[in-house]
Image 1 (cartoon, rainbow, N blue to C red):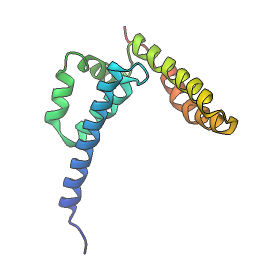
Image 2 (cartoon, one colour):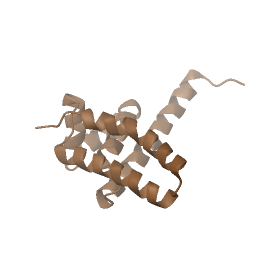
Image 3 (cartoon, rainbow, N blue to C red):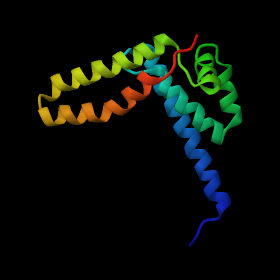
Length: 129
């Protein structure tokens, strides 16, 4: 039994909405817990909503706390200095924290390898004015 393209499209939109909401939730937790970087979660949520729900995207962009971060990224592909600093320090802290708790050299190397790509990406991002 095959599914119609219309049903696949609807399922994809629902999945993107759920994913967007989950990332907004992570961003809110990131505001409270300094361990989680807020900005990347918001950018993923905005991308999910852009493809699934213009109404939810508008709400997110209109938010007085989160909206400016997302707009700055969408218009200029840059993030605020504070967001960049927090994201990079959080990544460093996570690697150190993982190394301490894992106490296994190979697992620590794996964590380092997994974090180096996103770290370099954020490091190279321009800072908004």
